[in-house]
Image (cartoon, rainbow, N blue to C red):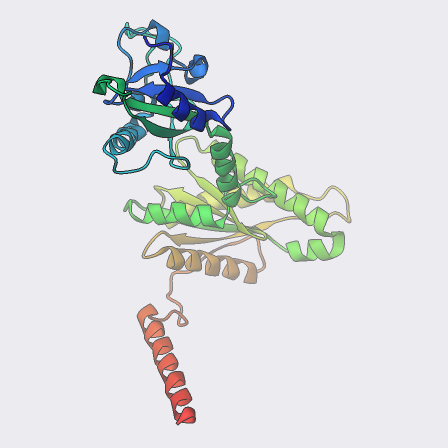
Length: 351
């Protein structure tokens, strides 16, 4: 194994690591196989010094990204993309197993279910020395950990899909899940639930008390949905005081029975022990998952309105199409016509 770098390699190496302290440096041959690596390559989870055959740089990448890494390296060697400063490709490492019961070399990486560690990879060509052969040519690469960046991106994405008060999935996450459910074809129901008279509680006791009630109701719904171990219920907070539950493999009659039990249980748990304490109940609206996401949610929301209009502590089901629902294409055509008329009026004034 080669232990030193040529003058040309030294210049390339200096350009790679002048501001990259702690990064991993690797030298590749013309085929993309690792010839040499800096000592801190142990951070990758493999022991290169113990291998008889050195791995290809793409072997370090997760199986879903290996082909992309190999293609990038081939393009650099073919001169199809520059390996200069600023050209990076990011990929997660192929994780290694702690135990190898199958006799596989433990020094080699292998795919398992484990947290991914992300690295960015930059590659620069090294031309052969004067009078040297193509065997001396290759490339120097730099592996830089970008795990913190990806962890931050994951946290940002998670926060964008989570309600900050209750920690439940928010409307965007629930609608995305509901959209996927529409393609399954199985019978499903959406339930929209809300605490009755929460606005009155807010006016009398303040925002802090209202938030505590919402948080408590959210945890109660989490417990009720988790208790149904044989079903995969999905719970989310839509906004304000309204929560939604996707009930798979249920018809409206079955969903009504389950939700009725939820409402009665909640009312029983929140019976006021003091005269001045608010008595809390909840109401719900049900709708079959059908047609579109907007249609399903609108029917469930109308069911909740009907339940609350009946005095609360009820379940409403809206089965009739609303007169206000119009043809989306007709609305689009009307808007286009309005724009055309406005343009015509402007042209007439100018004339």
